Image (cartoon, rainbow, N blue to C red; front, side, top):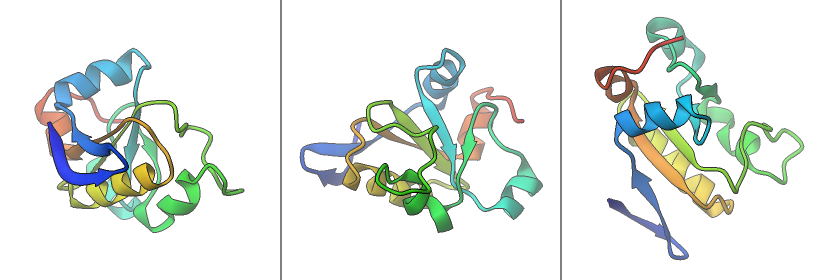
Length: 120
């Protein structure tokens, strides 16, 4: 399913949480929690997720940045989540602008846990 946002033929896609859980477990998907540290302390983080707050996301995700997080690769599928899915949609759009090829918005952490995903 495609969202309304499209960049050069690519669009942020939605991803069922159960599929994300499976793909994170088998190593075929990078999962990113873009919530701020206080939110993560209050509710936990999805097991296997990389944590990059939205406030520094562009700097950490841009492969040209000296602050680029090596966990992110433009050629590797990436799924993002926040509390509800709105901020993760914004961050996913940024990834497409930076040339990432396969980008998903998982929605909120609640989607992950409702599908049986563990917390770290």
